Amino acid sequence: MPDGTATAHTLWPKLATMLSEGYRLDMLRKDAVAALTVAIVALPLSMAIAVASGVSPDRGLYTAIIGGFLVSALGGSRFQIGGPAGAFIVLVAATVARFGLQGLLVTVMMSGVMLTLLGLLRLGSLIRHITDAVTVGFTCGIAATILASQLKDLGGLTLTGVEPGPFFPKLFALGQALPSVNPVAAGIGAGVAALIFLVRRWRPTWPGMLIAVVAAALAAFVFHLPVQTIGGKFGGIPHGLPMPALPPVSLDLLWLLLPTALSFTLLGGIESLLSAKVADGMTARKHRPNMELVAQGIANIASALFGGISVTGTIARTATNVRAGAVSPLAGIMHAGFILVFMLVAAPLAIFIPLSALAGVLVVVAWNMAEKKEFAALLRDWRTGAVLIATFGLTLVKDLTWGIVAGCLLAAVFALMKRFGPAAKA
Image (spheres, rainbow, N blue to C red):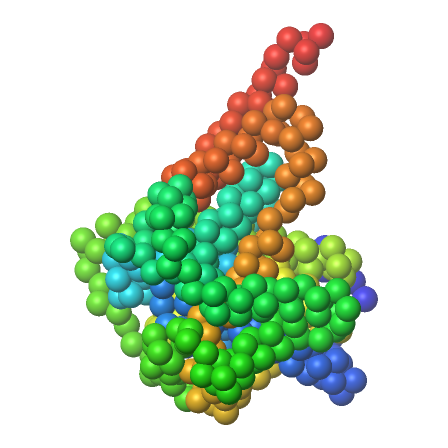
């Protein structure tokens, strides 16, 4: 079977290619098992990411269902799983805080259009040339920001004012609120994180996140624990998908949202292609970067129409899909279907999930996202170390766009110095 290298730059979905090669019943069985496995992982994670992003948990589920379906149906990777991603938490939360939910939906749609255009213009390969130092720098910066954003819910803290958005002011405000810590909430959050790590270590094939969240919800319900839950904050989760609707749009709003949409587009393109590249490394196959960007763009437009948040390829869920035995994009399509079934059947139970439990899930996500070994290795060379620190530091102090732009510019300067400097002439 060809690995896809010869057609890597064509604009043709992998699903169509796979179906033209023939699809057998044994392949369907493997895809169904993988789809169920990934859906079990994606269910609590999608809700946790949505809550951390400043929106209700059902919007994370809409994103996983609509976005997950379209990314797999139209994408350039056989194994990519699309949905809400932890990397977007900071961007989405800041956009909601500044422009409201309707502004977020317009931003996601704009980003979808841009991603689609990038793919149609065959610019997917350019994004993949971003250096490892920049990628690791902004990834670790996002991980640290996610961790900081979860401390309030993790400890059940009560702030005297609005929680600051910037990293260091946030830590200062949370430090002042430490006397208000809720020991029960903190215990649940820490217990959820610990249980996920333990299950991953001793029973790696078990759905640790789902087990931990269900256990926390049962404990909160049975013992009437004094913690804030999804039901207490959001009032529950709908039993199905909403009808698609176009958010209010004006030229002035589009212009105002343009810088934010560019940040969404840059992060979405990088995350999706990195995820597809990880799947390539695990399967010895080759994804189609331009088709992948087109699919991500269409998925984001559709997600916004259904009230969802930003969609991207998710590395952890894609890797889980491969390890669970997926052989085609139908696994990703079925994973979206399973999440929809879970939403229809189990929506009433979600109201008992403590917010500190979802914070515990995202603490694990942040820990896994931080590329600690790669960070240390890149520091050994002063050039890559400078690019890494610049990207990491500006991602924390300013935002993701500043970090990526500064890191790329610094990397370019070092590359030119190496090529045209005295050492090169010698």
